[in-house]
Amino acid sequence: MLKVSTVRAFADNFIWLIHSPMDARTVVAVDPGDAAPVEAALLKHGLKLAGILLTHRHADHVGGVEQLSQGRTLKIFGPRAEKVPGETQPVGESDVVTFESLGLSFRVLDIPGHTLGHIAFVGHGAVFCGDTLFSAGCGRVFEGTPEQMSQSLAKLASLDEDTLVYCGHEYTVNNLHFALAVEPDNAASVEYLEQCRGLRTRDEATVPSTIRRERNVNPFLRCHLQTVKQAAEGKAARRLQNTVEVFAVIRQWKDGFTA
Ligand SMILES: [Zn+2]
Image (cartoon, rainbow, N blue to C red; front, top):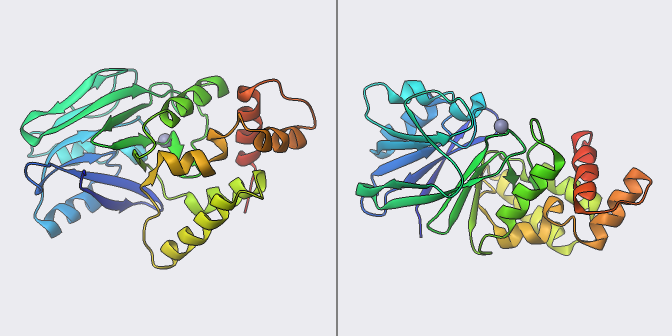
């Protein structure tokens, strides 16, 4: 299984360090929004940075790229449809990103919605999905349409259920409060909230999740179910015709939700 280290940045960002299966001291960073905590982690654990993967152009995901590039030769991959800093190799749907000497390779998925060019990296039993899929939630639809976002989430939900989900933020507990507002009787969410509260009390990360778990607790992946549809119709006070309409209503509901 892939070894991945967690680096915290800002209030609740995750920067992931993917260790080479061939040399555990060499890593690839995912979404380094801030260089300082990455440099600190490299120094502390005696690691060498060999590359960077970028899911989308927001500053809290790319802000550290230029500083980390100084004095290093890095292979940097980022979304073809967005302008990101550094000497980035642009990639998109079905491209394969390979770090040959590290034994690492990832398939790229286009997952527009949060931003129009947002991509995910899938490989070695893991998905790095930035701000599209969160544990028990999803990113705000800033640039795309609810239809695009809902298709992108469906694409991620169709990955193997054992796939580990490495997302961009620690939002799980708040997301679960919302998930339980939508589906109060979802026992999996009740249990998961209890578990995540325990982790957060000890200042431990709730991520990675798995696709299996997200299918069971994440209301944004469950818009096809009667429970979620009925809650959305109650909120909207009208009949909803399809899963995209259900998604749009619960996404808007979440935007104004405070736990
Ligand atoms: Zn973002």
